[in-house]
Length: 265
Image 1: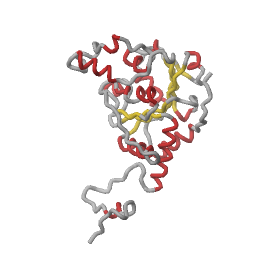
Image 2 (image 1 turned 30 degrees about the horizontal axis):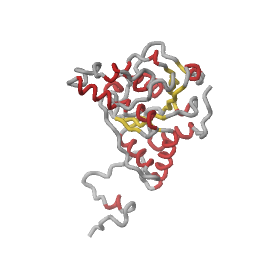
Image 3 (image 1 turned 60 degrees about the vertical axis):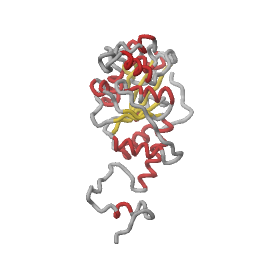
Image 4 (image 1 turned 180 degrees about the horizontal axis):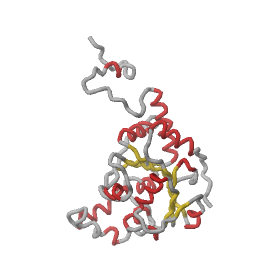
């Protein structure tokens, strides 16, 4: 059975806040690792694949269709997904670069460098993984949450994270296999991780052309939501209304930066 988190989250409220603050089109989901298949299969209304999928497709079935999905290594169609997730070994074959040589990279050396750059979860630390819409509450204590949105939505979520305890975020772009930049990095480090979804995520995972992906721990998501609420009270909210590229900006800026705006003569 799933263990009880020390922090009790109201996922219905969190999902509603995200919708109110960002007007997301894609369903926010939570992802959790399990030590055994039996623990994963104890999640309410869990679905198991009846064919082999890329993990991008598993995520998409939760994000786009609202399913609660559970997977093990045997359910995945390709080693790249499984190794990034830590469900399959990061062995010599994974790091050799052979699979992507001449496909995504011009030399075996560059392909191997790409593989070595990826953020991965150590192999053997868990056996199964589940993903489910946050609002369903079926996974009470996910390891990370996945938020798909436009650049405009993402920058406001980042601004919310920076409201208290500012830090400059620096993220990586691996190119293909950019799931390593999002859920791979977030699961491995616990840090908020923003990515530009790659070709495979868009072709197989249904990620829209304008979408980015934030993988984020529950505590940081709550922190970001609280920050966005503060920003909203200052009039800094989504959708961001354009002033116009030839409009006088002083009228809009004066209430926000009264000491910085130059008065009209």
